[in-house]
Amino acid sequence: MTGDILVNNQSDKIHEECGVCGIYSDTPYDIATDIYYGLYALQHRGQESCGIVVNDDGLFFSHKDLGQVSTVFDSEELGKLPDGCMAVGHVRYGTTGGNNRVNTQPIEVNHQKGKMALAHNGNISNAYDLRNELELGGAIFHTTSDTEIIAYIITRERLKTASIEQAVLGSMKYLEGAYSIVLMSASKMIAARDPHGYRPLCYGIIEGKTVKYVIASESCALESVGATFVRDLRPGEVMVFSSEGVKSFTDYCDTEKGQICIFEYIYFSRPDSVIDGVSVHEARLRAGEILAKEHPVEADIVVGVPDSGLDAALGYSRYSGIPYGIGFIKNKYIGRTFISPTQNERNSQVRIKLNPISSAVKDKRVILVDDSIVRGTTSGRIVKLLRDAGAKEVHMRISSPPFLNPCYYGTDIDTRDKLIACHNSVEEIARIIGADSLGYLPVDSLSSLVGHGFYCDACFTGKYATRIPEVVSKNRFEKRLSER
Image 1: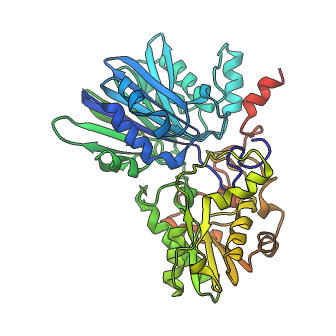
Image 2 (image 1 turned 120 degrees about the vertical axis):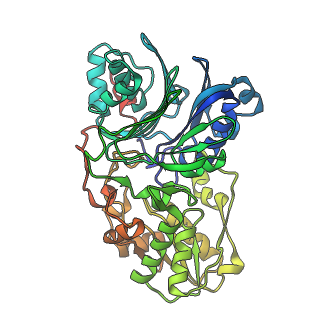
Image 3 (image 1 turned 135 degrees about the horizontal axis):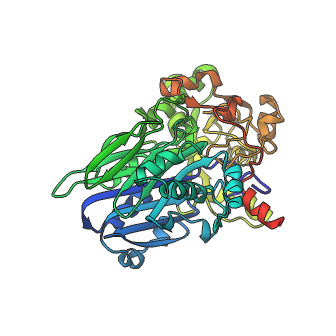
């Protein structure tokens, strides 16, 4: 990463890498449209670029570009993609590699034993070392994303094995970190989740005249295409969808402790999704209840910062008995990749995205609930919006613990330098953002959100389940190329 924590967004939010979607059907049909709907449901997971690859009787047809799903895939572009029995789709927010067309996914590979299209959500923590090894062996890379590294390793394994699923299994002994993958060969659809299960992956079924299997990052995408949820993939599981039915390979299951990213529940995932058996909406309600218990304050109204702060605000209100209110209207026509090239425009961005409802907050003591504070800049601007709208007091409550450490598994926090909590106490942060008080979710209460202890909280605690990489910046591959 260069400059601010978020290069394109200039906001105080962290971002997660991507969303994946794949469909296998017994018979050909307009499969691209269903993938489109699945990606649309996953748009919140990535807004830099998107792509779809359709398999029509072994021939691959694709369209990929920068932009959001509805922009890249208008009716004309969708109409160019043929009917098929399989398709893979992807929405991207890059935590490794720059935002350019060459890094759009799915990645397509042609090799001696066939072809492959691969979509990946997560971040390979040993990607730098793997790429060095591959380049020294003669590999030529066309992108600067870690997804191409996965594709290379799977291809290398495929040349030594009898099937694509064995190649995927063989590659898993080299890959460290987070990866939820949907991969399509000429005749099979493969889904794989890393042994820690950092990122979610599930599948469902559409039953009718023909049977269709849908694989996606979140259950909300299954519902968008009319699929019935079957289950989440287990950490370490590889699943194969083909004319022979559905097969599961569990060679890497139970080899590592489950480490689902806790921020999937706090911020990344849609509230109507259920991940590893836990409702995202219910997890956020519980976060709000815990905040009300741990950080009570006398106030007149509880408001949430749209969108991921709303459920926690409702939970706070229910537990405290303080009325819940709508404090902001969000402009839904501005995406996360809204460009702010000048300082004046950056200062205006929050006011463009969020508008306070003065009648709801004027002359009131407001409890403001949000999911996180990274740098503190956006939080300060939101507090000021409420002050300008007439709020008498603003007490901020955060439904996550303070960010103290980088993430190597698929979010864009790669350094401690810009993390406000690393350099300031809670009281100092409250003063910096202009709040009358500030309270974070206690780190030891995270298990109450999900009902178990199988989650990754390394960004709060510094306890990593894999080796810490030496080179971690988002643009590490671009930087290396520029130095040669």
